[in-house]
Length: 154
Image (cartoon, rainbow, N blue to C red; front, side, top):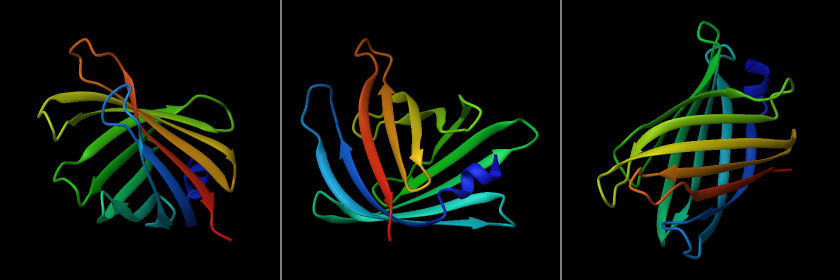
């Protein structure tokens, strides 16, 4: 499983779409991501850089596979907030091309807790897509909040 994490090492070009409410048009951006395996190949540390609403954006991700619990864990922080999103999950196929993680985050706009689901799908070793859905549990249902498409920089 750590070899599957290592696919994310290197330099990436990213394109993102973000939705703040169902039925609204997305905000689209491009940026870069630099991934590095750290601590003897146990963790993938990724740094995302872009702009968001005209402001510099930086996000950091740490991905792990816990041999004891036999599950993946992801943490996410960025310079637009002060929270930490922690998600857990597993891959759904033997080649680990699809990894699904779930977590709970606080919506910075409303202060409400939201259930999240992230699905990362690897097309090949140079391309993947991460999609995120959220559900605030208030009858709105699950809606897509983000899509990130990544291509390895050549």
